[in-house]
Length: 416
Image 1: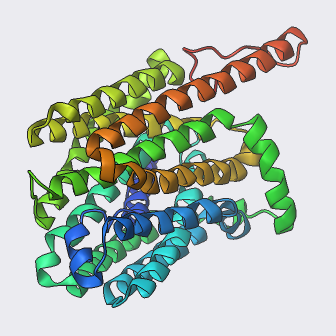
Image 2: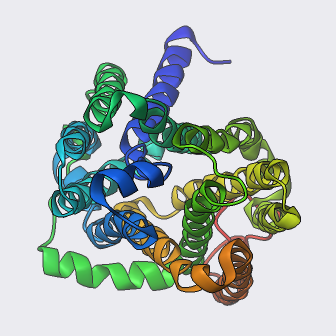
């Protein structure tokens, strides 16, 4: 039975993870519902709208390769807080942007700050609650969901005030969340005690490949496929609904992303399901739900599109919670690097997902986007399960040789 100080520490840990994830992630999709406003202010088309997300996710993918270094060098507390402060500054810059080039520059900056913030946060779940990583992974996904809703909804809902006032209000909300994290984030275990001496950056980058190949190949593939699917579907559905025969307004498009809300409930059950059926089978279930949700959107009516996207989003964040949990089962000595590899793959997938649908949109529209995501999901499943089988074969051989004491299986809660 936990003591009062332990319960307080646990509540603070969940508050930190949720608040930091919301603040760090919220800028990523903040322009996604603003296609009409971007068209007016910057004379942009579908290509510009897609490139604004691709710019940020490409920066995320590249910077993620070294995003674990600030936390390793200065401690997760300092890394998270500096990343959140920089995020607030970048949002202010976005609101003051008056040209496409300046807008793109600030989107690049946001890619850097999001990478450092999320990498530092996701690799520190085990430090915040060594025995409750699965529960904190659920809070991390909750924060990502809330951040996605906040980032899409607030600028869109306030756009009637004007571009700059809407983003100033958005930056204020991010600043308040940063203050919460500053107050609740532990000052001991998360700072100087966790600082390590870093190898040179060339050696760091060289050492990422073995971590990718030996520790997380299935997670890297899974993360990339997940973000290709999410970026493609959530970007193009807003364009789909802004055009004939729906003609949704900017405010309506912002409200569309409340389809993420049911996922807030779903992810709270994920830790229990991980313990009950194992991460592998839970991921199989999530993939099937994702595909079912997308196919539902082809019914034609806006109600079916909204319902299908709600199912799709719940499945996406179930998968994301599973991946965050599995990352924290990786050997602590390489966890920062594993987090960097995973996030690099994850946001490389987002870059592809943001840009790829534009190649089929003019001819095939929304059905073409759905078909593209289905193909990516099927190909990713084949690759990921191939990596899992190979890993299990290696573990089985080690077991026969006496190298390990047990063999993980599909119902085990450890990394398969």
